[in-house]
Length: 400
Length: 224
Image 1 (spheres, each protein chain N blue to C red):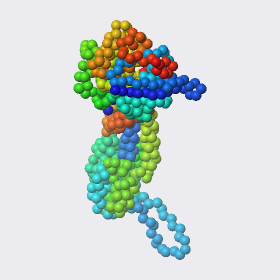
Image 2 (tube, rainbow over the protein chains, first blue to last red; image 1 turned 45 degrees about the horizontal axis):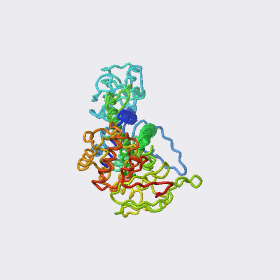
Image 3 (cartoon, each protein chain N blue to C red; image 1 turned 135 degrees about the vertical axis):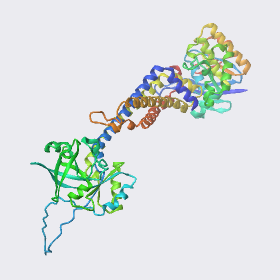
Image 4 (tube, rainbow over the protein chains, first blue to last red; image 1 turned 180 degrees about the vertical axis):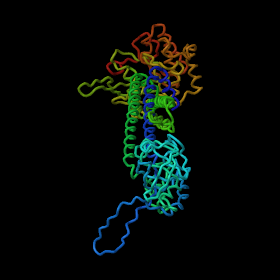
């Protein structure tokens, strides 16, 4: 093994330019592999952050209560109920908050009271969704602080945060007062202390945020919550955590994946595109190494003949050329990974991804995998030409 | 004492229609310590005989025994090992490994045997090169040596594992007269000092005359 390694490395150093070109070819393949891994991974991260990253991963919401029959009838009964704007409450939910918060997979918990209402300013009226949040936890689920374009995200009693479009529709600016009426018919005069812009028209025009205590007043809910939103460290664990929370609390919980199946499908398709591109890069590397080893064995046929005549076994000849392939794979893998890492350094980190920049995540370069696959691929690519070389008839080879 | 024996050796090439019978029942015995010249016209079967004796090729039929081992029934792996330990080769075109130094070429058979280049092998190889008059060229790349120097390196390589038999196929065929005589002097000296058996294939009668025994191959058999 040691001597075969010496011969293999000597063959590589004997023709430095050729070896350098070969290593460069492998390194380019590895660079493409790493760049694609970082790009596909970063893109997925960016899309997730912009979609599922800003939503609740597990939502606990009271189930609608079946309408109450005021009279009992015989035979078939057709029941018609007007749609209710008031949510049914999770009456004992507050008892379970600490239980949910303590789960290791849970990043943040946001107890909420939400319902519908209207916003009035003079003659202008807008129908809105009123969301009551715990002060200090305004950005627990949706990164409201990050979307603020004016004022302060801090909620307290008597203040409201509006979307930029809604503020423009009603002609509201910071510090002005606005009249809010909930679906329960309760009015409150709130002061606009913050304006946000999420970029989604619906949220910017139809949602307003108030403190939990303000929401309790507006919806006449001295106790309980209408929903609890939970954010996880790993959003792909949502289904398992949802089941766990339901078992733990008995409350009806829903995973984001129930409504986000299309997003997951798109991300899966994107990941598969990445796999294809990476596979092609790996195939290119394998073909490159195999052809170079094949060329080397042809060029060194007389030397193979001499080795065999001097008593080198077929296994030794195979080892020499497989080690040559392995060295090329290892060098190309290391060079490609190093260049790939350096080339990705100037790109912003995943926390600094912004619209308009290429979302490349340097941490998802799969460097170790790229080096390992290149090494294994190069070894595999060398086996066939090396075996063919070992079968060379020494008499014919020496005569060449 | 008998070193090797071949009996009724037959070697044919090609298929039925194009079959060429190169060796036709050849018999030969070599004693230990002999220095023999193998003579004969081109196509007489000299090179084929050397190749079979060197275990690089198996005969079509017949018996080949060396050091009491029946080599006609041995596997490729066994023949390879036997070749490494008991047989040395000197080819017409030296056939050195061009990317290695003179010393690395000389110790190649030992490194193959041991799996690595040992200090003992290096010392032994350097000593052989000094004996061949190449003390100044020990670490020279083989590709930079002259024809005569390359052939002397090849002789040193053939002797490295202290083989019982050295087969030389036209070892001076590619050298000028002075270099040829120098190589033959060295071979003769080693034969006398070490008792190594040499079988040298040559067309040159002057070279053949330096050997104690002349074996003439004609029409696939040993004549006379």
